[in-house]
Amino acid sequence: MSATVTEKQRVIFENVSKFYGEVLGVNRVSLSIPPGITGLVGPNGSGKTTLMNLMVGLLRPSRGRISVLGMDSQRPEEFFRHVGYSTQYDAFPPGLNGSQFIRSYLRVHGFGAAEAEAMTWKALERVGLTEAAGRKVAGYSKGMRQRVKLAQAICHQPSVLVLDEPLNGLDPMARAEVISLFRELADGGLHVIVSSHILHEVDLISDQVVLIHGGYVVAEGDIANVRDEMEEEHPAQVSIRCDRPALLASRVFAQDSVMEARIDDDGKGVLVRTRDADRFHLLLNQVVLENGLTIEAVAPADADVNAVYQYLIGSNGEKS
Image (cartoon, rainbow, N blue to C red; front, side, top):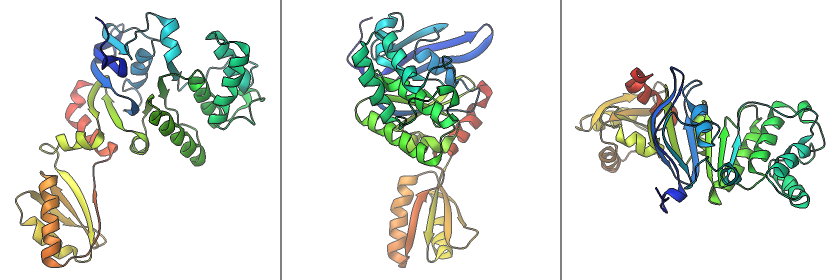
């Protein structure tokens, strides 16, 4: 099948399964991942690493088809020029310092000495490791090892960047810098696919998410849209902080779209459960105007990745 224009812009899985003997890795995965930052979310053992290894060509699927920007890994020389991968595991050739680690990778890719040298220092600069470039990688801290792996993944200027737990071991400042780099790369048109089992990280960095559990993809897309599609089964929760929460609770609870209105423990707000979030927000505007309420904040109380993931595995856990 010839690659379509759409396929050349996406990472596509078509009914992909991977089994290790009788052990399930991933099963019946169908995905279409656009440019931007995609968070691959799930607990340890959910299938994230298997999915990433399939994506970068380190594993072949037991069945199904994978296309990365219209390419497949059966032409490795072409494929690996366009894909960068940072595994969660540390495996460094002994005795190499940071710059040698990057430079040797580029030379294997076929870059000339002068070009590899320039690309090495550019990659190290982007991850903040130029001062440590002459030190042996074996002596790096966990955070520095994470950054030198990221430098290796980006040094050959790939179109698709696949990063397995890249924020592990980074201090808060380094995490902020790396997240900013992800955003810069994605804004430049790259596919940046990042796995994490720490769900709040995904809220910070992702344009879209893939939620995986027990080897099955249980949802994909923009997290807000995924949450909206779940309203019938899992009513949305909205937190409102205001000056007269008891009055607000009594007014909104009288409406058909509201299932519950509970005053917060500190007495300064209301938690509302509703099956129709859009209708509720219109109602809230009306109640505020009619009663002269002062609203300090209105925010979804369960529209983060953690809440959505817990809802989904609660209803799909039998697949694992």
